[in-house]
Length: 132
Image (tube, rainbow, N blue to C red; front, side, top):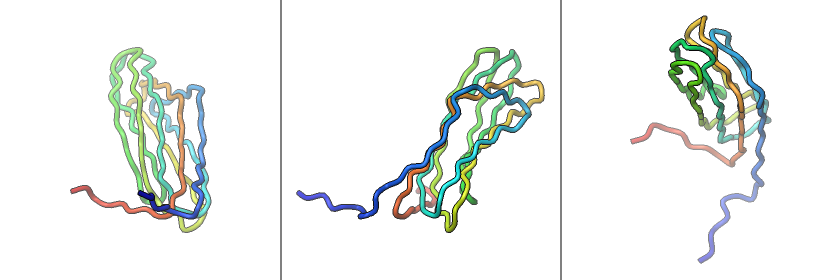
């Protein structure tokens, strides 16, 4: 059986990373990836590590235009760690920016974020709606 081709267009991927640790807390961390016109399946991931004994929540949001995915993690005690991942699909009618933003909910919180990656894979079209 022959499998039909989905597209004559080659897929393109755009990616950016930051492996070194950045300290947050109540200071907002923002990573940006610029992409040209097109439709994209976008993923982001990072590791969040607690740097003190407090308990607090780290909130991260991946956004592209008006589309977004948000995650929350509660880090309790020194050495607590959590991997976070996000996924968004979006069509940019003109060149655009994908943004990953993270902030802690406590001024005394000390979070280290590292191994941060954003990848946008261009696709022919997207369909996005509520799940049944």
